[in-house]
Length: 217
Image (tube, rainbow, N blue to C red; front, side):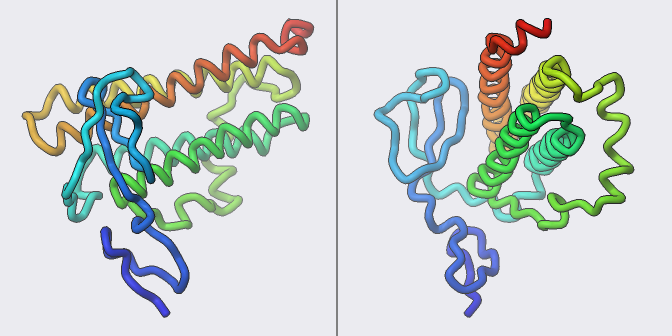
């Protein structure tokens, strides 16, 4: 029978797991990266090498009252649908697999937001209707043919531009806020986006190094 998550009080269906599986939350004192997991790292942040401290007892209440968290959810949804629509337009299997990997990253990022900030999403926000896809999709990909590897590189570059813009958005929000919880959340989200930027930069460089790309350049 339904129950409640002991942390965020979300109604759970039978045998469903919500926030209860999160054992630890820790944050880097240098870059503000917030991480959740079952075991603590050995004292250092995996992103920048800074010292980490355990975060205990932080109650956000209704997390969606914070502009930064609302913005983070919206930006991740935007990126998810960007990759998903690119996948639908892909002209070959190899490119399709790349786009599927990219939008799966965004699904993982949305789940991270749920775990860290209890920002639970309505499934309808992810599963848009086909007519909505047609309404929002065409203008995003002007100038892309999706027929060769160059279109994938352009998608990576546009995705990097989005992630950097999102990171800078949270940095700017943090700089405009006084010290306190909301500022800390902005810094945490900026660090999260910095990780996403690094991930995409690595994948883009790996993609450029593939022999097939050089053959078609």
